[in-house]
Structure formats: C-alpha cells, structure tokens
Image (cartoon, rainbow, N blue to C red; front, side):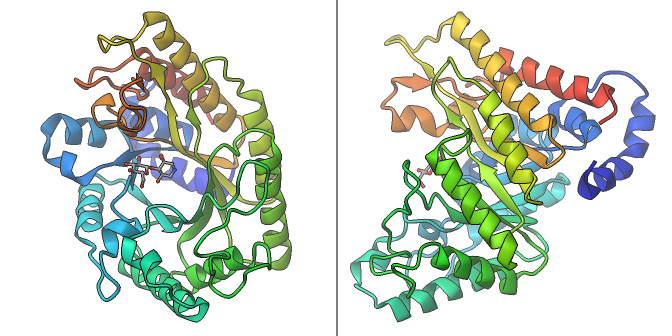
Length: 357
Ligand code: 9MR
C-alpha cells in the first residue's frame, strides 16, 4: 500500500468503525474504505441546482473544474486573471470536504483568441506561460492538491503535436523534443512546490505508440529529476468491445517508474437513436466497462484516483460534441437516477473495501 493510501485509510478509521461492516451506501464511502479518491468533473453554473450539488457532495470526494480553470475562462485578456468560476468550485469542495484537481495549464486547445492572434515572439510566449502558471498555481496553492500541468501534447503516432507552446512558434525550445514540457513542469514546481504535478493524455491509456511516447518521457523526466508526480489517463471510451487489460499493463509500467496514476476523464458514450433512446443492452455493456476500468485501477496501488468526466448525462460534453448522435456516457441519467454503471462501480469499490485494501 502506498503511503498516501495508508494515510487516507488511517484518517477514515473512525468512519469505518462507526459504519461497522455494513456495505458502503455511496461511491464516496466505498472509495474511502478502499483507500481511493473518486472524483468527477464539475461545471460551476450547475452548482445552483439542488439535485446536482446534492449528488456531487454525496457521491464524490474529489472534483475537477471541467472548463473553469482553463486559459479561455481565466485569461479573457492578456492583462488580467479571472478566478471567479474556479473559486466557486473551491468553495463547494471546501464545504463538502473534497479534494480539487486543477485542469489544465498548458494545452494547444481552447486558448483565448488574443493569444494566437498577436503573433507573439517565443520570448513573450515564454513570459506569458510562466506568468500564467505561477499566477494560477499560487492563487490556488493549498487548495488544489494536484494539477494537470500539460494536457495532450502527443499525437497518435507518438510524435509531439505542433502547437503554440512547442514550435508555432513555441516558448524557445522548438526542435528540442519534450524540453518545453519539462520547462512547464519546472515552472509549476516553483509556483507551488507542494502540489502534485501530472501529465494528462487522451488515448494513451492502453499500450500503443502514444502511450509508449508518454512512458518514455516520464522515464526520462524521473531519471533526470524533472519534477513530475503522475500521469492522468483520460479514458473517454466509445467502443463497447473495450478491453481493459492493456490499461492494467500501462498502469503497471507507469507506476513502476515511481509515479501515481489517476484515471482523469472516464466516460463511456453510447449510441442514441433519433427518439433520444439508449438500448438497455448498451447500458449493461457500459456498466461492465466502468467496472473493468475501475478494476484495472484498483489492482495497482499506484493508481490512486478515478474520476469521471461529469456525473449526470444532463451536463455531459458528449451530446454537444457528437450533435446528439451519442450520449448517456455517465453514471447518472439526466434526472440524476443511478444507472447500471453506477451500481457496477459501487459494487466493485465495495468489494475492494471488503477485501481490506
Ligand atoms: O468537456 C470539456 C468541454 O466542456 C469543453 O468545451 C472542451 C474544450 O475546452 O473540453 C472538454 O474537456 C476536455 C478536457 O479538457 C481535455 N480532454 C478532453 C476533454 C473532452 O473534450
């Protein structure tokens, strides 16, 4: 058992003793007994909805702003920072005794228009990025325990993506491989030395050229003492014949490097017919996928958190980005009713807790 899991378990002993041996009633209770964080992405405007905030506080012990800490929310113009949305989430987390993951400081996507439009020099971009990382991390120091410092830097064949931060024009390390990522992690460590620093990636969850590239980068960083604490495996799943074994393999090789793994953005999208209906069979297959991913995480003590990308189908990003063709990706339906996937996750977490992990 890792030190962080042991400390979490010790802090929960009174709860475990008080609840005796009755099975946990919520994901949160089950995860706490299993020594794991269970989290979800959150949209601040939905917190005003009673069913949303009640479900969130009851079921999860970790949350992450889905968009509220991104550049385009925080940095509407060059000269000022707007932390209102993120602060709202922090207040909710504090009131409900939840940990907060921060997301994300460096990404080639969804940056504000002014950033790309001004044709800044590498020197100026370097200054802007360092200032951004330092200002946002210092604002949330002591409140955000783990940050996705860099998000989605590799393309599917394992090459670095062209981006404003890397080579278009970049922050001064164009042509030097992962040096720009290393620089971002060093700035992040200086800004908040206590925060856990994560590299977060999509479609690099199993064994493939992209996850090989991520693995090679982390190995190199650990070897040279670059400050990095973990890898986030996003896990946006859309194939119902999903195989979790390669995920377990990847978690094993990453954690063998001495880092933590968080499942950061888990959802399993399903086909939606023109009437808006989802097949019952698909909901059952979805439940199995959630269970298998969780099992892969629980098998390995280096996997310390599992997080879904939202929790109610009402606010999932999937229907919007698929023009309604897919949906139903999360643990609760649009009316906050738990789905078969919820029962599967609760059962898997509870069985782990009962085994005394
Ligand atoms: O779910 C997020 C959606 O609301 C945003 O419009 C979109 C663009 O910022 O980002 C979505 O979240 C992404 C996350 O930040 C990084 N990994 C992929 C997620 C889904 O696209």
